[in-house]
Image (cartoon, rainbow, N blue to C red; front, side):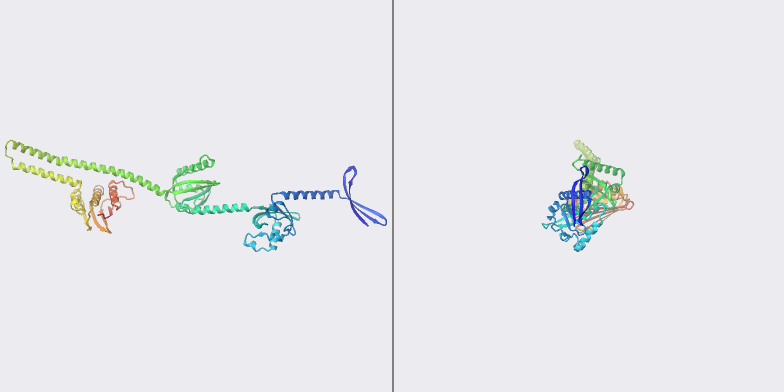
Length: 525
C-alpha cells in the first residue's frame, strides 16, 4: 500500500518548509521517502500570483487584447476593452474558425482566402516576429454588425500569442476625409483661372496648377526650388535679391504674427519663352506650405501705359494745335500787315491826294483813279489769298476732289516736287465735315513730306471699295525706321482725325525706301 501526502511545517529556527512524502507498507513495515518542495511550491505560487496580476493588467488596459494558443490559435483570454469594442467575450467565439468568419476582406486577394490560408497567414506572421513587432491592418465585423478597421499587433510569449487591436476606424475616416479634401482642393486649384503654386518652408516646389504653367510656361521640373524660380524669372541679380528678401521677410513676419494683413505685390517676371509679364502676387500659408497666387495683369499694365502715353500724346497734340493756331495767326497777321495793310495805306494816300485836288478845284488825272483801282484789286487778291490759306473756298464750292487737285498744284508750285494725283473715286460726297477732315489729313501728309522726306516724286491715289474711301500717299524720300518710336505730332494729328472718322491708318516705311501711307475710312454722307 502506497500513501502520498504533503506536510506544511517549520524547520529548525522557525523557517517555513513544505515536504512531500511517500509512505509504503511492506511486510508490516512502513517505509517513508521525503522531498523538500518548498522552493518549487513557492515558485509555482509566485507564478500563479504573477499570472493573476498579469491578467488583471490586461483586463483593464485601454487596448483590446486577446490571448491565443500558439498551436490552435484558439482564444484563451479577452479583456474588458475587447468586449467593449467587439461585443464578444471569452469563451464566445473562442475557436479560430469562428473569428476568421468575422474578418472582412480588404482586397480581392483576401476574398479568396480559405480558413486554412488565413491560419497560414497568421502563423507565418507570428513566426516572423522580429525585434520590432509586426503590425497589419484588418477589417472586422463587430457584434452589432458594424465593420471597423483595426491596426493589429502580435507578440509571442512561450506557448501563447498576444494580439492587440488598435481601433483606427476614426483615424482612417479622418485620413480619408483629408485625402478627399486634398483631392478636391487639387482639382479646384488645378482648374482655377488663377496661377497657383505651392512650396515648402525648405523652399521645395510641390505644386503648380495648369494655369500657372499656361501663364508662365514653367513646369514643376523647371522650378523645383524657390531659388530656381527667382533665378529664371529675375535675370537681374539686384532685383532678384531684392524680391527674394522682401518675400522671405514678409512670410517670416506673417508666421510670427507680426503682420496680419497680407499685402499684394506687383512685379514683372521673365516667362519661359522670354516674354516679360506683369503679375499681382498674393500668398497664403497653411502648415508647412506657402501658397502663391499670381494674377496676370500684363494687359492692365499695358493698357495703363498706353493710356498714360495717350494722355501725354493728347497733351502734346493740344500744345501742337495751339502752336499751329499761333503760327497761323502770325502768318495771317503778317499777311494783313505786309500786304493788305500796305495796299490799304496806298489807297488811303491816293484817295487823300484826290480829295485835296477836288477841294482845290483841280482836275483829277485818269492815272490817279487807275492807281486806286489797281490798289483795290491788289487788296481783293490779298483777302482771297489769306482766306484760301485759312480754308480754301474750292473745298466748299467744288468738293474734295477739286480741293485735292488745287492742293497738288499748290504743293508743286511751293516745293518743285513732282506730284501726281490719280482719282478713281466716283461717288459724290455730301458731308462737309468728312471732306474737311480728309483734306486736312492730305495737307498734313504733304507737309510732312515737304519737311522730312526729301522726296523727288509723290503719288496720291484716291479710290473706293466696299463703301470705304481709300487714300494712298507714296513718296520716294529717305523714309524712316518704324521700329523706333516716333513722336511726330503731324502723324499723331492724322491718327486722331482718322480715329474720329472711324478709319484706319497704316504706314509702311524703311530707311532709304520712301514711305507709303494707307488711309481707309468708311464713307459718311
